Image (cartoon, rainbow, N blue to C red; front, side, top):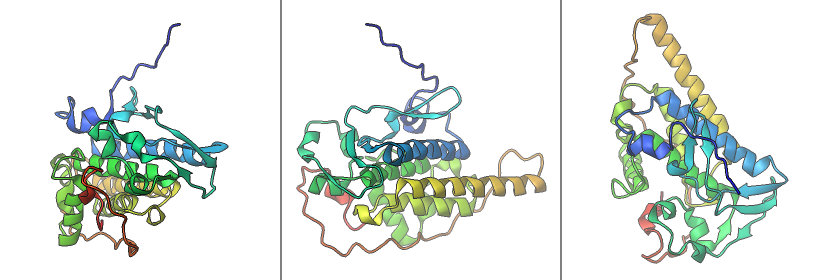
Length: 264
């Protein structure tokens, strides 16, 4: 038997964010379009089929980019077939199934699922939220002592502009930045009930791209020959996250460093 696979001309997203192709950073609007493409794939998996498909391993290395930079979501080895689409039923999965897997996968696991073993479509939303933050920051989840801890600190101190990839400095329109950061941080809330659906995420990302394109067009009208738009540094505190007043279940130190999740 011969297996024939599509040739993926541009490798995977991780290579472009912090891997072999990091010396040639992706432009901001291209990152936005990639994120929208992945959101559309997840939206289809969650709502477009008879039964929800939960991917469970959404991360940059599993997002492949073709010759047109269209994203392809790969690695469905660990997927779970869920309840009928749009239902609110849970899938109970033994989280010990992740024992022995590589840390890069563990870092993208929904903490609520890992603790309770309850898998829902918003488990993928959490993982996708981490991808959104990595697209903005150009950093792995394990860097800066944990990406979420760093972002949380910047939110608290009102220095959220510091999380951006230095290459993107001055290239993101302020309104686009605000919209993007708000939805990314909403995706990585501890509790699934406080996260948006992937359909809501898709709509916000599309709006963020529209805001960026409108701002770029306005700048181009003022400076037709300009290749780069020097947007002001964003001084901005993220929108308040929904309160998570219910006590968290304890997680042992061996279970995906708890500091990633606490009180985000």
